[in-house]
Length: 119
Image (tube, rainbow, N blue to C red; front, side):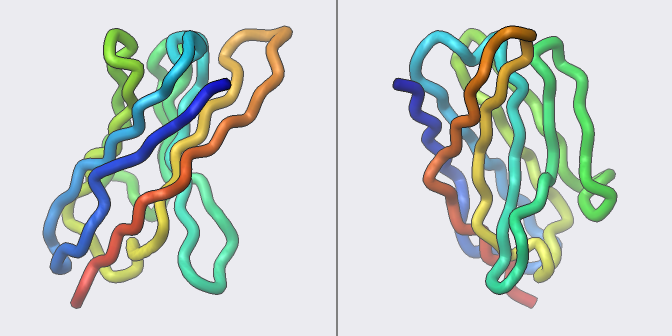
């Protein structure tokens, strides 16, 4: 059973920074595409940033230039560095793992970590 455990959320003022971490148990991390999603109250969950098993990244337009996703396969960890935070970044942030190789089928989620940005 794979578990994803997020950490690093908290309360920060607008313009501040946070780094989220997500540690994966099991042995699928290096072959997984990893993503950070967020869900604000009353809104649908949205993709914030993704990184493929071979390191290619993609970002939501709303966070380009402010957020950076990275991964450390030796530590089974994916990070989300967030700078210049805005109140509209307030949400629960979730880590996700999906197959990076064909023939596999899984979709794992973490429990989420709250990020609150005050104005």
